[in-house]
Length: 365
Image 1 (tube, rainbow, N blue to C red):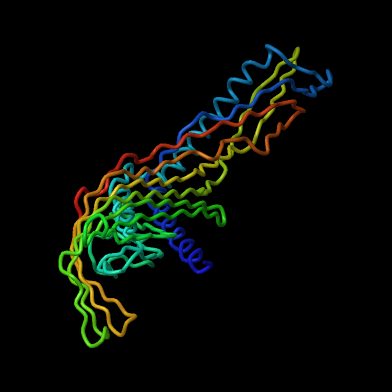
Image 2 (cartoon, rainbow, N blue to C red):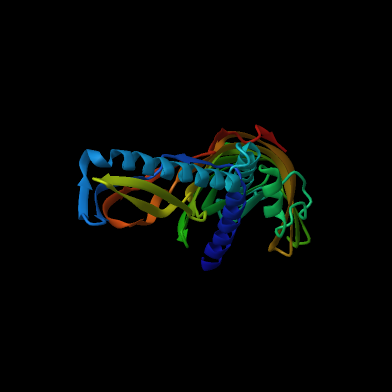
């Protein structure tokens, strides 16, 4: 079982790489700037000495200072969107994951194996990969990140189907040659901040049209021809946080205070820090109705080779959801020329760029 876990973790991390690389180019960050509240300040004037100022006398300082902070915040937002906001929709990517889920749902089938006497149990794992071509080298793992950055949206996807048990029953007592089966699978994993869940439910029916023929005392067996159909539900969920680092943007603001015949200038400095990290959630729900015709050959009593053709009718959708996980805040705030009692209020960020409700291809050969 540990090998299965390692396999799924590897597939999940590959999926996260594809998602994060594309969605970094799809997200748009927005939000309100953080705010600095000045409760009171103490300034040392020549001759007069220390003077404490608070209340309404700080309104001009307050407004000017936060206007400067807002300007630098907007500059930081622009820098963030230059990094991660070149593209908007990810419809091809979402369809790629939906179609990969459809293929991955065909796990632990009994195709070409319909001559068991009473029941048969299978288990297994299936990987579905989608690309515009069946060429296994169409996407180079070393360059797919660059391709996604250039294109913004690619038809690509990975799906995992896990079947704990698929139970097939020979229902000759209902109709000769009829076989029914049910399947179930569920797995929940968390690894290094990535959570993965998959659920698989299915029912199936196969009819043995041409019966099995055995030769050479069973050394060679042709299992005839059978037709199959059913209904399979496959759900997968991947969640992880994508960290994005933006350099802090400094701000500086000068303000003059007058007391009697004396004027003193104070300078506020600090950094606007933007953390535009966000949560990425991929949720795929697919319903598949397969139609297939299959045959198989058994050699040496233990090896079974299948051959067949078919098509799937598919329903469902894929949602790629983005949710802000970071904030904007002020750091290293200080005042030259006096002492300040201040309070900073961070601001939540918003992220836009989710792609929802993308359906798999209705018919797939």
